[in-house]
Image 1 (cartoon, one colour):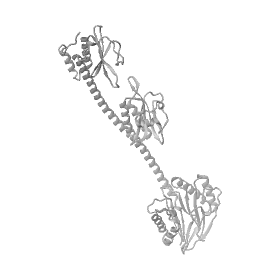
Image 2 (cartoon, one colour; image 1 turned 180 degrees about the vertical axis):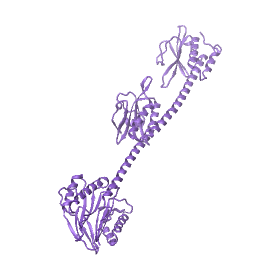
Image 3 (cartoon, one colour; image 1 turned 135 degrees about the vertical axis):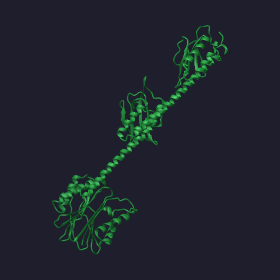
Image 4 (tube, one colour; image 1 turned 90 degrees about the vertical axis):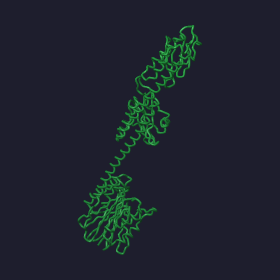
Length: 531
């Protein structure tokens, strides 16, 4: 049998080849007809194998009675021949012993026509697949955009984690998933859907490092029973926030692995999830800060309520008090107590620390002190009872320094008790200061603490100043303290002015000394002057 020439096969073969250029053409039918004509001309059975994604060559068309395998075999059975075409591989075998391999001419025009048809068909398939991928990519991007909007609108951090995981699984048709968020040096499980998951993973684990580099998908042990995992890191500007892991992609044939394009899709979604999670976290912190600020404002209002608003009017004497906390609430306390029996009490206390803990102890001090003042005068017994109460109601690392003084308005005698507080000052008419020194330990240190008292008779023009260490320990730019001597100088310079102006002068002096440095401690001053 001889090979036909280009003049021997009909024009219909050319027309069939040209028909492949039309979109509506049945490529399979045309190729089968071309292959059958070639086989009939040469007395062989044959099959065409075309490469598919992944590298394997799959049987596209065949002709004859021979059962050719679905995939191109590595080893050929006896009597089979292999012929390489530009876009395919042709396997053929003789229908009878009279046909030999030599009868198949690689330059046969009909064979070249068949190769051209296969190439055209393959190009059409590639174009179709690329068109499909482009459309799918558009749909995918639209879905990512819609999902990004959906999760970005969720500011509840607890609900957002579940929302992110659900949408990631939906996007990739995953059967299972887990979301881990970074907590210190550990990734902790935030949500898991579809089965169990490990509760925590070390941030420096090799599997986690592989996920961040894009070279790993984690361990199957993370989702026990899962067969195929895909994991991506959730990051913002290279800073880790967590990672997403999905498992077992669902399809019509069951569950299977995730293609390479799914990693890119999940990574894009993880970028949106990272921003949404960060926004939700910042929103939660903002709400918490706002709540704390409201509580601090309320605490500041409560604390201001316990400080005296109006000074009692005492014939022959002038009294004033002032307090400025370093924060919204503070640990300084002062009171001026008129028992309406001719005695005036002056009280300044300083709780260790600042802020809310100190403010709570100030409230305890105020309540206990007023209960005792309703029953007794300022005395050693009162301060000892107050000390025992503070020891019982405060933590071991909290204590209160306090200076209490009581003035007998009839005799002008000032009796004072100093429990570890800064020494008060009495500025005499000649400008000489007298110090009201300590007579016992601060309140709250020892339940059985002992205290002593002393007295001083006030003369006309004497100025009494009880203050907290926020005044004398105010620091300047070189860390030098304002000190007691500067306070005495301010009192001397302003001793004849109204007490409100004296307090304003102390404030200006201390603030000017600090030269803009933030106030380091609560500041309190109580002044008493015999007219």
